[in-house]
Image (cartoon, rainbow, N blue to C red; front, side):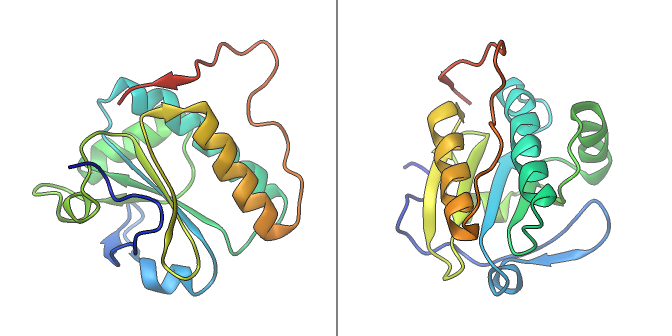
Length: 167
């Protein structure tokens, strides 16, 4: 069984962030799309992927994209997740889905990282696992189209970025 595919309805959830705030998917979707990134702090592919997601987040933040939200959903405790954020320069909200990983199970995760771009109507628009350069570019393109903007390049010249890294 693989993660929920594009076109499926995203299960709603409410999780607490490392900042102590409650985050509700249904509430967030009322304001716009959500990019949900499931990860584990000890996962090397997650450590590689989340700084690129942070770069994407910063591009849209700088463009004033208030309706777009990026959430990391950690399968670790809040303390370890805060350390991860500091070590890897992640500033978007990080929510906690500790054992028994109820939300991760609802999304049928088999690997981390797994990314879901969830449209305002609650449909999964893009489902991606591992690090996929193509999928990240597609997520960027989709979000830019929703805002009628042209974002900066996600990958910089000279960066050694593989096309895919399995999770």
